[in-house]
Image (cartoon, rainbow, N blue to C red; front, side):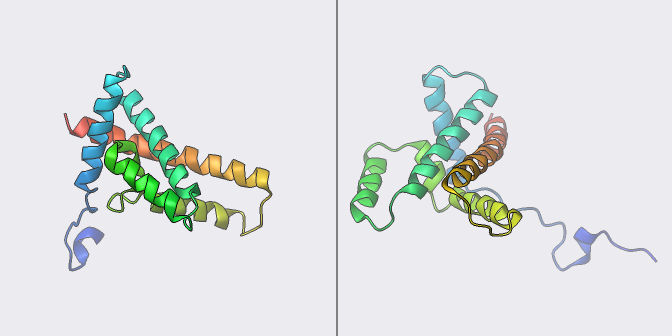
Length: 149
C-alpha cells in the first residue's frame, strides 16, 4: 500500500509555518542601521546586540506597573516622540515578543512543578529566561538580516 507523507495526507498540502510579521523585519533593519551608526559591525554582533536591547526593553515593559496610567502614557509618548526599533520589537502586538517571554516563564514554572520561589530564585529564573529569549531572538534576527541582503 502506497502511503502519502504526513504533510500531504490532510486537507492542507505541504503548508508552511506562517511568516513573521513584516513590522519585525522592518524594525530589525532599523535597529541594524542604528547599531551600524554606533560602530557595531557584522551581522552576528548586530543581531546579538539587537536581541539584548530588545529583551531589556521587554523586561522594562513587563516590570512597569500596569495600574499606573501615568507611566504607561509616558512610555507611549516617549515611543511616539523618539521611536526605538528595540521597543517596537519588544512591545509591538504584531510581533508579540512578550508571548515568547511568557511561554518560557511557563515552561520554567512547569519544570519546577509550580513550587514557590524565593526572591533570589525568582531573579535567577528571570535571568535564565532572558538569556534563553535573547539567544532565540538573536538567531531569528540574524536570519532576518541575512535574508534582507
